[in-house]
Length: 260
Ligand code: CO8
Image 1 (cartoon, rainbow, N blue to C red):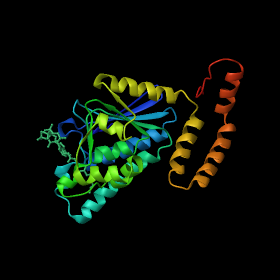
Image 2 (cartoon, rainbow, N blue to C red; image 1 turned 90 degrees about the vertical axis):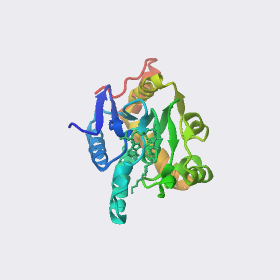
Image 3 (tube, protein in one colour; image 1 turned 45 degrees about the vertical axis):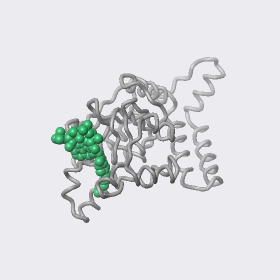
Image 4 (cartoon, rainbow, N blue to C red; image 1 turned 60 degrees about the vertical axis):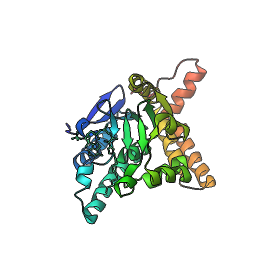
């Protein structure tokens, strides 16, 4: 399928979705959200895809937020529908069984930060800037920022960002635990794809099980989380990935997962 506002590329088990409205700093309009959601379906249905990477086109932005030209025209009901559209797409992203890495190449503001927060982890270029500036527009984050940011960096840090609307540099975002690695701009994609490749070479079953166990465990008490892990562990032990991984160790060779 071809898209107008995003690019979808699949290579060596890794899908890359690039937000592609560089003239509007890749802002999220209704068309982009519809296409993004369809691309996620395409990725989810492709059995050859083991990892998804998200990035932005152009030098300046990952995503500079929801499209303010569209936002400015909405009444309350339309705003609710637009917020739901964003939540549905970003919820679908977070619910993918394969890992997702955000390669944040520039501004990740408002909906852009919210998109990155729904990924499994974030690598950022030294040029990246993060923030939830909605308060400056007289609104609040509407694509999950008030919920996902405090879960990741703690309530107080999240409230300072949301209430002031201030931007953080990539280094500051790393300091508060929002970003895993900060890289030179021209090393961002290479390093992100290297990590994606390392994950794609692991067994499909344990990768999905590990992601799901961590995510499910975050919403429950420790005992329930540990029970989730036990079930997921048993599922992995019964898989051909465990057979290959343990046999390879005992036979002193490198395991080959996802061969067939
Ligand atoms: N929406 C639409 N267009 C945008 C956006 C945006 N979010 N951001 C930038 N653009 C456009 C500019 O209008 C400009 O277009 P043009 O060339 O036609 O004038 C072009 O992109 C380049 O931008 P600038 O000239 O402003 O570039 P600067 O380098 O001077 O500034 C900034 C870059 C700092 C990123 C600046 O563009 C900016 O502040 N952008 C807005 C950031 C923002 O406030 N984002 C939050 C938006 S609200 C949101 O995300 C809410 C999500 C939940 C929605 C819930 C729905 C109900």
